[in-house]
Length: 229
Image (cartoon, rainbow, N blue to C red; front, side):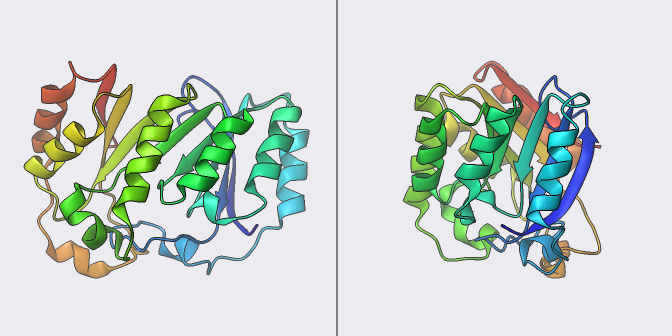
């Protein structure tokens, strides 16, 4: 696997734990609003798999958990082996995924080598391909959603409120996910490294408008909240 970024310590990416984050390069989607296109397209320098995981092993006294994110981690064939290694070393392991590879996700969930999964749900079905910037079989997303709700591994769903999404789009996503433990909405981040600067021409919901939708769903999920500045 290629590693495009490594953050030694985070207090916010694994619920209630001190964690390190590994950013894997490459992605099987091309979301226009992606805030780190060089990572998603594999253009960042490779930090070296062995170097990064050696440093993680040396940090066991400082961190409780390791978060594997991307890009999209499930595109890498050796991901299950690395997750197994982290579990053997005593770390809690969190995986971030877009859910487009349910076969790999099932393998990982059934292995017992992951403790928490965060799945990005991009849009309601009718807008999924447009938001993702790639042709895809939406049934694969549905399968991953169902897997997370069935296997007993702790999880959350999260939606970045991309430019062009409406309040009704968010409501459709919420109903698409129910019943489920957690759904978090995240504020879109405008950066210089967006996948497609053209998304900036689309309407963006205000924080207040997003929060109104969150309030509608707070009684339906165990947790539902708005994240971001």
